[in-house]
Length: 255
Image (tube, rainbow, N blue to C red; front, side):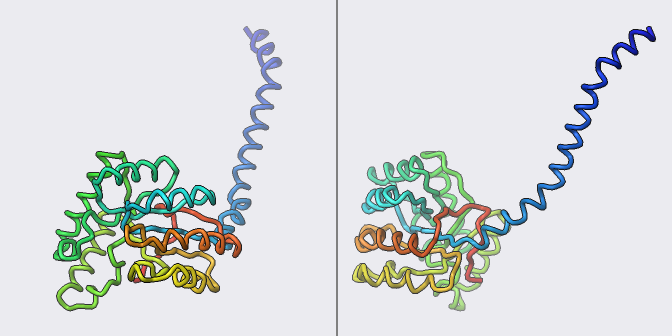
């Protein structure tokens, strides 16, 4: 029996040593990873990143916007409404299939409904969530409030508690809301020109590494579509890369 044990140890010994060395090597490598990863983790802070975001779609302009984004190999985030028109159904599907991010805006975008009460806001939001999940398999915890978190209703005595309540409950319910750092001004009026939209974006990027750009995907804003190529080309020239918003994205909130 002893002879057999000696024979086994003599044969297995080298393998045991190899396994031990590999294990030690793996431990050493693992110990070095955090140190090596530090520059990589910090590199994103140094990068110039642009988040193109489109509110209020889908619209009759969505497919044109998607085609332009494809042409420049850029991904964007769409904060969508509830739209059950036949053309809109195709747009939701195209957003998904082309690799863009779909986030929550509201179902109706009707201020008299969504800002009537905190409960009214979440009823409307949940209606949108249900539609997106049931029809398209989309789940998102990313939200943009219509008008932003600091919209004019937040400065009125009657509605300020409602907005504050919405923001508090969004946090409690596990949502993350995003505002923007650059307003392209395209949501003000269809009369806003292509040049005004481009200029607003260009001015907003000054001395900014990470920019969250508000654009609109609505039927009346053809000038957004016309301005988009110039906006993308400008951002690329300035050294920005493009990313979509997700739960790991640094928050951009007005408060």
